[in-house]
Image 1 (cartoon, rainbow, N blue to C red):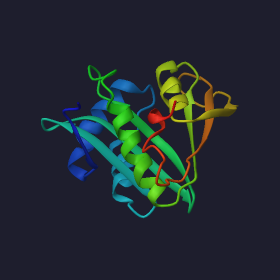
Image 2 (image 1 turned 90 degrees about the vertical axis):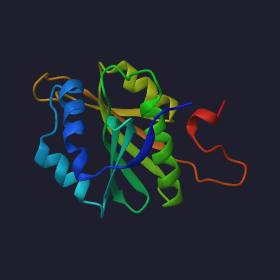
Image 3 (image 1 turned 30 degrees about the horizontal axis):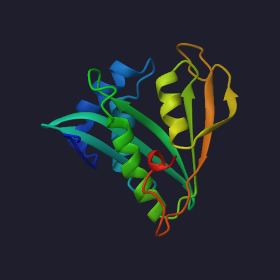
Image 4 (image 1 turned 60 degrees about the vertical axis):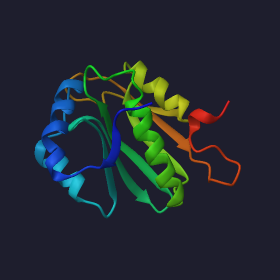
Length: 164
C-alpha cells in the first residue's frame, strides 16, 4: 500500500519538481518552463505524488488533440525509485484520460533509460521510431513510443498492469 497521495500539481510544488528534474535528467526543465506547464491547464495536466509534505514524483501530460496525449515528463525523487511512484502516477492519469476520451499516447525516452522503457512497455507503449541526437547535451537518441489507450467498459481492468 502506498503512503503517498496523487494530486494536481500547484505553483508551490515547483521547487520540489525542480529538485527531481535536476537530479534525474541531464537536460532539466527550467523553473519558468515548469511554471508555464503547470499553469497551462487548458491543454496540460501535471500531477504530483506527495508523501509527508514532500513531492516524491510528478507526471506532466500535454493534450495534443481531443483523443491524443503526449507524456512530457515523469520523474521520481532519488531514493524513492522502485516503490511504484511512477506507476501510481500513470495509473491515476490513465483513468482520467480514458474518461476524457483519449485513445492514444506518445512520448520520447532516452534509449539508455531502460527502467523507464520497461515501465512504458508495461503500459502498452511500443517503439515506432528513433529521434537521432534528440538530447542536446548527451547527443543521445530518443525512442519514440506510442500506445493505444483502450476505452473503459464494465469488465475492463482499471490499468494496464491488471492485464495478463
